[in-house]
Image (tube, one colour):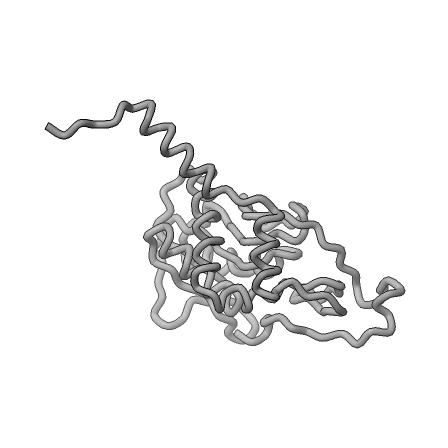
Length: 216
């Protein structure tokens, strides 16, 4: 007869596994730094705001193991906080495609994405959602939440229900509102300014727009 480990021992082991999956802000930022993805300069964010810091997540996503490590921790956090049974993942193109796929792999769910058609997010490529289907919206980085809200609106147009949203880093520090609970692997408050209210250290520095908004 197979000897089973006592229940309390199994529970402790499961708790230990969850503890190992936890990542704090410093650990998440360390992964970005190791990938050379934490940039400093003068950047125009996808929101239109200006910042002296930019998270070039593409440099993180080129490393499959690093991406899996981050998304595994995020998936554990989603499982812990979302009680609804999620049946699909939808991300906004372009930035959300890779983390959306990896979250699908970690959670064992189909992953799809929306693209812009005449400026509006839509499901294409024969991706379909059923009415009432429970969806997790996956983003890479959230700043103001604009792209997330647009993605969620596109999902809702199909009749599906967005039960939660998640991202690797919420650079609003928890201020961004997307219309559903937002689960971030890390919250990191980064200052950003409108073009007409730049701080002195950015006023004479040429700005670059490294994001992907408008490409899909």
